[in-house]
Image (tube, rainbow over all chains, first blue to last red; front, top):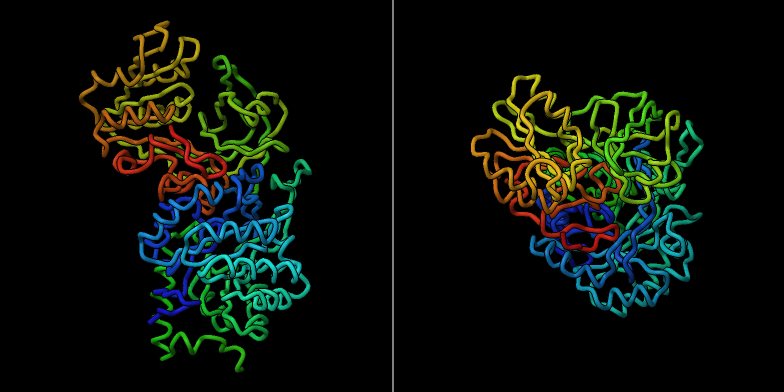
Length: 296
Length: 248
């Protein structure tokens, strides 16, 4: 009842593990699939091994979580075996990748084997990467185009909300040939320790995730749905089935779940069964939910 | 939670390069649970509590070196407690400690003894001076010692002391991973618990940096039952800060 085809991938449900969550080892990706995920996105992988920012790299705040991991990753050269291990579970494994320019992105996408690629042009706290690349429509278009020519796998582009007009970046990704966009990455944020005056995160600032950003993400998804022809995948602050339904009504074809996995790794199973019950009760299908708010 | 400000009230030199830092704040935690200790401006690292208001630290890298620069009246930030601690059983409990691994086992011994368990502590260290919390273990049970150089107790590894121990209800172990793996190979896995150490980033079970296969050391652990670890990469390899596999 919840199965769907998304950019050519067959998903048993529209609930995907978000990038950067339990995504460093094949074993942890596998565990998310056991928790019911319809697809899993890996930790963002770059050209060279990177140890990330110094700790604290994540802290819980009143309304969510703030993080500045700093793109720690073992490089694509050391990552294929983790993807292969995760793929044994039979659910699509999407490799999140990042680079400083089109050449780095396409080098990775041309070598790594995954069911799809998600381009991280949206991490808010990595100098020279992520949102610094993803705030420029011309760069996003160029990177998407070069990745599309380097691989036959579907390409998703993950967008940052830290721009004046997210639609212009979504349109750039679409012009570059993206198969879908993913919205949103974390919202730039900061917290300061009042005992000492030190910014809490090792990187001083980072990105906010969790409950606080859901209304921001819903609006971004709503706008992107109107502007684009390609599917929008919603992410940002989903912690129960109602949140997932809301994203779909805003126009998300599927959703990704991140921070909420920390306290409940079986959240995908929990949301699936509640969504099924809700659809049965309403006598609706997934297609009915899709973009429902735009018809009102 | 945001880091809680903890002021250092006393520093005790336990052994060369091992110090206990007492704080003005107590934490309610189960032995084996950990906290993230933030040395402001430097780093934040996971530490086990050795008392309900103290951590015992070995100087090993930049973060712990910076911590060793701190004295009474200085303060640090503490988040936690996090993770699952030891499941404290009754009957005859054997505690196997390697070096600073005695830190979470000392409060465990005291708690268990208070509820009537019989305690045998096997303490291992490179040399006599590095034996940690010997008096605390002696106060609540029997202590047997092994040192690499033979300066105290049996010369050799603490794992050799295990060979004489046939009757036990549960084994608790904390120390270098090579030593813990040797212990796991010698005991009944379902009757053993191990406190693991991994590079921890978020401490919240979200990022996955500390995963041993699919097990999150910061959330599902740091204490795991031996039978859970038996089929994993425990004792084989760990991951560095980048997530690369590194042989143990």
